[in-house]
Image 1 (cartoon, one colour):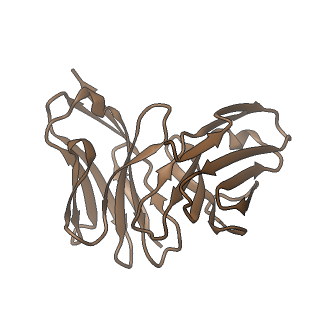
Image 2: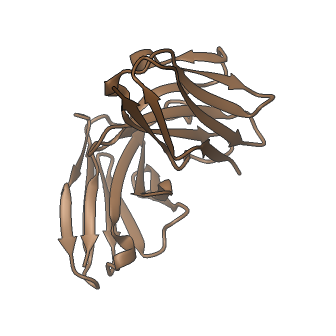
Length: 113
Length: 114
């Protein structure tokens, strides 16, 4: 979607290295989310943000941290990558209310070797 | 807490046949319900949503879904499948008391045979 971009689109990294994924939006939406997608699990929420510097944990937050210093950027950091973090990561944005639905980025495919 | 169950990880239909993808939800408060579609190597795209207005919701590409509170279901249907409908479909639920989060089902992959 033109209003939300993720970078990089693909990344291969070694176990134990830090990795940062970036989500950038041009929609000025308040809410931003990081999900991971794995076969048989659908999408699972890692972290989310409800405003600049306001973030909270999702259901699978261990080993991940996030930062949001500007409305348009939401960064996901794997402090020390492990093979279990090999996944496809999606960023999503939404307007103020739960009934608006999400707009998703195109995803980042991360492989930890 | 809310949850979503999608029945069937894979569904196969012939082109022109009815598409039925099943979704059941669990929520102690009125839910908002969504269907998303994901084409290969792409992000999810909102197909339709139920937000307590009409119980029959029409979405893009000829899909529709009916909210049935008594059955806690929100099944997705399309009268006639097209080859371009082949994709993965996700049902999702959120609530006003669930924070700013949406919970997704495990997904159903739809195959369309010529």
